[in-house]
Image (cartoon, rainbow, N blue to C red; front, side):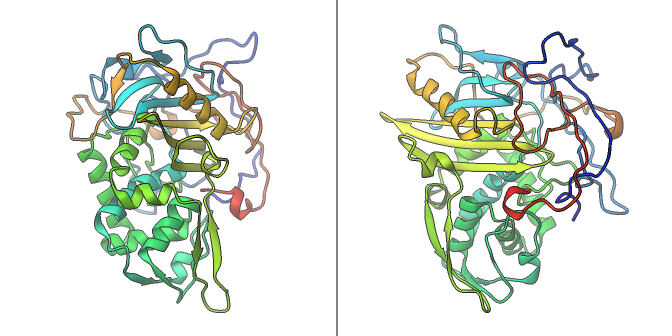
Amino acid sequence: MRSRRRLATVTVLLALALGALPGAAAAQPALPADASCPFGTAPGPPVDESEVPQPGQPAPAPLPIPDPPVGGPAMGNCGDVVAEGSPPAPAVGVVSYVLADLDSGEVLAARNAHARLRPASLMKTLTGLLVARRLPLDETITGTREDADQEGTRVGMGPGGQYTIRQVFDAMMMASGNDAAHALAVRLTGSVPATVDLMNTTARELGALDTRAATPSGLDGPGMQTSAYDLASIFRVAMREPPFAQAVATTRIPFPGWGPNPPFEVVNDNKLLTTGYQGYLGGKTGFTDDARHTFIGAAERNGRRLVVVLMRGEQRPTPMYQQAAALLDHGFALPSLDGVGTLTDGPVDDGGPQVDIVPETGEAGPVPPESGEASSWGTPLLLLAVVAGVGGLVALRSGRR
């Protein structure tokens, strides 16, 4: 179980962080000329073996870097960007974020929007888009042992259990069930690899050129990456599908048992929904050791719908959902101003050359602190972190999502 374990090593990896420590030298990563922003070409190195290719499989090649940036020139800015005449966005402790209008696609504020980072379970938004578009939700499927044995967070499917696709879909989006994502991926195309190929084709069709899926659940895998910009774009398209919009807005559902296990209730894990944020429409949470914490949320007020995506953050000193709420509040308080960019929902020309990076010595990424430890605040470039081994399995609900 490659990424359910934290590495039992004494390796110490250093990099500068979100709002670096006082007096720390401003060291910069070595990047190709094509990408001057941190994580401009690829995520940093993993902290475990989750991204090691299967025997005989080559490491995925780096994705091309579009030039100019998709969504407009300001989307290539490494730091915070806001519309002219707009007040600064609130301080949030994440490497990358995008705040945008869910209907027009206008980007209201962003930080390092095209940083290529690991999505964790936010990748389920792309899987969910395909389910909403392609599968008959009232059809019944049977759970398998392979579904039940998926790593990380599971909703509780079991071999022989009988479920409607609607129930499995809702459970995937509400409670981040990796067992549900596996079952739906197999139902979509007949196999997980074929569904991953379909996800990547769909991402390209939407102009999400920072995105490469490796798993349908968002569990880390070889070449997995996306960006806050791409996820905002994908979520915006997915919210046009009524089954998707309904799933992310659902607070709780009954779920069938299997074998000796009785039925139970699935509860949405998105705290902006369960704590009653005004006008909340739904979203998705995510976490893996490599991705750190990720978050998507959308809300509506006075006829205006906004979406925010946050990537590579921590739950301290401020929980991710509260950081998202601060950005949404900021967006709703803005007057009508020209945005700083536009989300994509269709094909675009990548326009850029293939970037030659040797995976082992490419862009230096941060090594995360233990889950729940505080991160520094301010405009983030790189993380200062120490990874020490703590053997043993990660608890099911606090592990990879």
